[in-house]
Every structure is written in C-alpha cells, then in structure tokens.
Image (cartoon, rainbow, N blue to C red):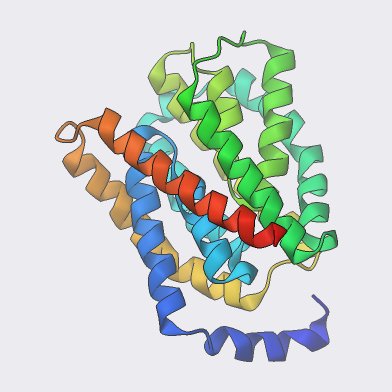
Length: 253
C-alpha cells in the first residue's frame, strides 16, 4: 500500500461495521478455544468465515490475532523445544513467505477466496486422515515450506508441520510448533507489510481480536477434559467445511 493511500485506508478502518468487528472477535475466541483443545483451529475456523464477511481482513487480521496462542504455549513448555526441528522448518518457511505474499498481492480477490477455501478444505481433510510421515530433515523442510505459503496467504499454516511431527512426544510437538508459529507470524507479517498487503482495517481488527484470543486459550484450559473431544472436533470440522465450501462456491460464481 502506497503512503498516500494510508489516510483513506485509516478512515475505512474506522468505518468498519461493528457487526464485522464483533464477528471477528467472536471467531478469535472460538478459534483460540478450539486450538487450545484440539491443537489446531484458529485459522481453519476463522479464515473462511472472515473471508466471506469482509475479505480485506484476510489474512492479516487472522495472523495477527493468532500471535498470542504460540506465545502462551511456548511459555508453558519452552524446555521441550526441539531447536533442530525448528531450524529445518524455518529454512523451509522463510523462502515460502515470498510466495505467500505474492499470492495475496497479485491474484484477484475471487481467486484468493478460492485458494483460501481449497486450503481450508485440504487442512480439514488432513485432520480427518492418519498418514504416517517420517520425521527427517527433508520432510520437516517440505512441511515448513507448505506451512509458509499457506500460513502467509491464508493464515492457515499449522497442519502440514503438525502431521510430520505427529510421532514425536506431544510436549515437544506443541513447543516446537509454537516456536515455529511465533517466528513464522513475524516473518509473514513483515513480508505482507513490505508487499503492501497490510491494510489498516485488518490491523485494527487483528488487534481487537487479540484479547479474545487470550480468553479463548484460557477458556480451553478450564474446559479441557470436560468435553467429548471427538464430537467437538467433528462439529468444528463440519463448520469449517461448510464455511469453506460456501466461500468456494461464491468465489467461483
């Protein structure tokens, strides 16, 4: 975004309907709670619905709102961080960020909506099947690359790397994914800013979503163990599939 465009964009940010902001905040709470319970959810839940309601908020608002989640996770389990896995994942993610930024800035909005819908549907599919993937430098690098593209372009980047690390101890997986997300979020937001894709309305809404993200994570800690996680997961994946399908149909018509 050029410097001369920012004043008008700021006015646009201030004129956002309160219903859009309320929807975004509600999605942040739900997405964070889901992620706190199931290990994924922030992007899968919130991205397709926000893209339907107000496309200019995606992916920046979702990426910014999700920043609190890995920080809270890493604080809890920092000693379990695997720096070797982190290093190879980031080697894959860093060059992929440029491709994600290009997708956001160069493709038409209806094409971006279709890409978002397809990625969300693919991530839902990955969470429904169990695939055994060896954990080695090549697979970690590849998963980091895919995560970088999808995470920067849509705000949904966790499942590829999570699948590769599925055989590792849970605490190591959570801590390593958290560290990867923290660095990835900073890199993605920097790339999107340099690429001119950080609209002020998305930044304002993303910041408004942050407190709800924290509350959602805290709520997940309170209800963890009290819910039937299998049914809860099915419900969330069904909601995500429905919203992504509607988004895809809208993008293609």
